[in-house]
Structure formats: C-alpha cells, structure tokens
Length: 503
Ligand code: SF4
Image (cartoon, rainbow, N blue to C red; front, side):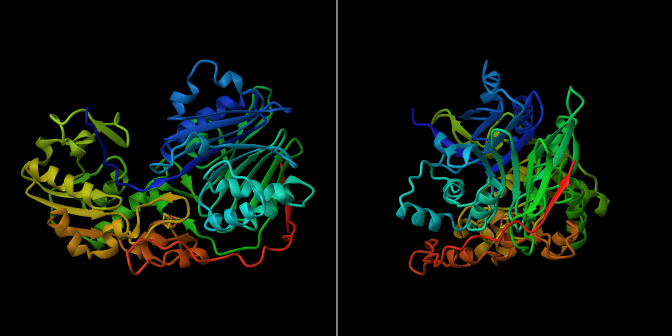
C-alpha cells in the first residue's frame, strides 16, 4: 500500500521539557508526572534518570511519556529520591533513540546525567575541535558538547567544571544535571528558555525540591512555585540545602517571547508572568490595531483560544467555538490509502456550520508559518458558509528562523520572510489579514526593559555566531554553513562570583 504521511501541524515546535526532583522517596514517579504535564514541549522521546545515592538508573524510549512509563515495571526500575526527566521533540530524520535524553556518562567527575532544553549556537565548532583532539561523540546532539567540555575541565568540583564548560558554549540552555547525591539546575546568561523552582512536602514532613520548564508541572503535583532560576544562575541542590551560584558574567536577557505567544501552556507562569494573561492581552491589542466589522470571533483551537477571548472582549463581538479540534490525532497522520485520500486539515479541525453559515467571521490564530494550513482553514470556514473571513494573528510576521531551541523551517519556507501581509492575505484567500505589531507584543508581555528575544520577528540575533550563520548563499538560497572558527579556547573561566544559600 502506498501510504502518505500528512504533516498538517504548521506550528513551531519547542525541542524539550525538563523536570527534576531532589529529596522525595518517589522521585521517578514525580518525574513521570512532571513530564506528563510538559508533554506539549516534546512528543518524540522521553527519559528519566534516578539516583538511589549510589547508582544512577536510566530509562529512555521513543514515544510519548505515558506510553513509555506506563509499561509494567519501568518506574520500579528507577529507585531513589533524586531524578531528572526529559521529553524531546526532534526533526524528521533525527529521531534516533541515541539522541534521546537524559544523557548519562561516567567520567572523571563521577556519574553524571544531563537533560537540556535549548540549542547551542557554537556546538558544531566545538564538536569539530573536540573530535580533532580525540573526543569520540556518541550522539548528534549539541548537549554532548557540554558533556565533553565538562569531562575536560580541570576544576576540582562539579559546579566549577560545569561553569568551565558552560562559559565556553554559546546559545540557549536550561539544563538539569544529576549526580549520585546532587541536582544542578542551570540557565544560560541570556535566559532564552524558562526554568522554575518549586517545593513539595514529602510524606516524612520534609520539603522536596522540584525544577521544571513550566509551572504547570508543579500544579499537577500540588507543589508550590518558589521562583524562576535566574539567567546566569546555577542552583546546586544537595542535602545541605540550595546554593545559588553566578557562574557567568551578566548578559542582556533574551527570554523567548514566543513562549508567551504559543509554546508554553496558558496555565503556566513563564518569566514571572501568566501566559494566559499575555495571550488575552495580545487579543485585546490585536482588536485595537486591526478592528473590523464582523459577527463572530472564532479561534483556531487550541492555541488561538486565549487571544480570541481577548479580541472578543475588546471588540465586543461574540466569541464562538466555530471550529472543533480532534484531540486524538497527533502531529502527523498516515493516510490509509489512495482511494480515501485528501482529508488534509479536516482530520484535525471541523467547522460547526450552524455557527458559521451566513456570518462575517474573525478567525484568530497565534501564528502563520508556511501559510498552507492557514489557507486550508480559511477555505474550510468559507465552505461552511461564512460570508466573510478576516484572519487575525496574535504575533508579528515570522520572518526568520530560531537558533535557540525551537524547530523552525528555513527562512525561504516562512511565508512572511518574502511576502507582504497583503500578499499573504491573497494567498490565504481571506477578506483581510492583520498581525499584532512588535510594540504591542512587547506590551502584552510587559517587556519594558528589552528582556525578551524577538529575533524570529526581526531577523536580528543576539549571538555573534548566528549572525554569521544566517548569511544566505547567493547561489542557491540555502543557509550557508558558518565559516567561523573558534580562535582561542577561553582560559580558565571566572570562578563563581556569588554564592547564596536558601533553605
Ligand atoms: Fe523565541 Fe523567536 Fe527568539 Fe527563538 S528566535 S528564542 S522562537 S523569540
């Protein structure tokens, strides 16, 4: 049978979610539940490493969190009161179990496991350099560069070695590191990806420490959200309590604004702010910037819902769930046969004709990537009898790829990189199209100090290597490999500049 794989999810994808536990007798069970709450951050592989104080125990597999850890006996083989978990999204052709995390190593610093959310922008250069010096890489993952740099560090303790390694890499990392008796939680100095600290009462009356990509993982466990791990901060959690170590010089913060637009769950607090609050505000600002006479506001579910609520509240046009999403379909679907082909986006979304017929519809979504799915949705709404379809997008036009841990198509594939909103509107077959502006996006996340990364909307990147990488080849329009070499390996890094304790 000649099957076709449909991929109709045009959204960007975050690469990973991480969850850590220190000091709870059911650490692996908690890590499993934490990963379950973070499933939206990566659906293609997951893993947990636990520590019983002597040994590290690992289980990783391809698939979603539930199918991996609901297998009989799997969690029972992960004993101990410390654990880290990781859930990963990878691009096609890069789905090998080999690249699943956490990565576990036994090196001169002892037994160590790492789970990483983010993307290192100088990993390829370091990999070439380290291989030249004899390092043998086991995976394609940029995280392994950190492992090799860690093993090569001359520092006497692990926090020093981690600082050494991390001060030599560039880019985005929210990182969990587990040893036999310690948990480290580290965020890069620009703070691209989120990482939060929580606390949970244990059956023995003590407090267990939790670390997660998003606070929604704490809510599931009835844990208490304590605070963000700050950009440039390394938390060392041990039996003696928590040490806060500043391992790197301060840099301008570059927190990913798209976490608020799309990635994070709306019930999470990200970078100190409610995601739902940001999305509703985006909808309100979108209504102010792009008003239109219409009868109903319809979200593209699920991610367009909070912005639609905001648009409806601001415009006083009724909110209607005119599109219903099939929650049981994954990101891709294998069409069963030639004879019953071409379901396309209808597998995922279905309009309610009774709500849409004869109406002037404002269709709200969070982003347009290639434009092909949005075009099918507009056509679907028209076929359901809409008199007019006005598309409203709760972020600015996405013109440039992300190099900081988000899976994006190439610049050429992004429809807004080479088309004006008017041209895109025509391609979609809509009556009008409006994107929220960049100043409005910043206002929606309360960014008064320039703390957020907005590179995919501006094409201007905060890290040097990326600026070179994005040079496009004049001949074929493809991205050119960076012609950058690392000239000097940084000398021994500055030792931690500040250490604080909290209990
Ligand atoms: Fe987020 Fe876009 Fe910056 Fe990537 S480039 S970190 S998606 S804001």
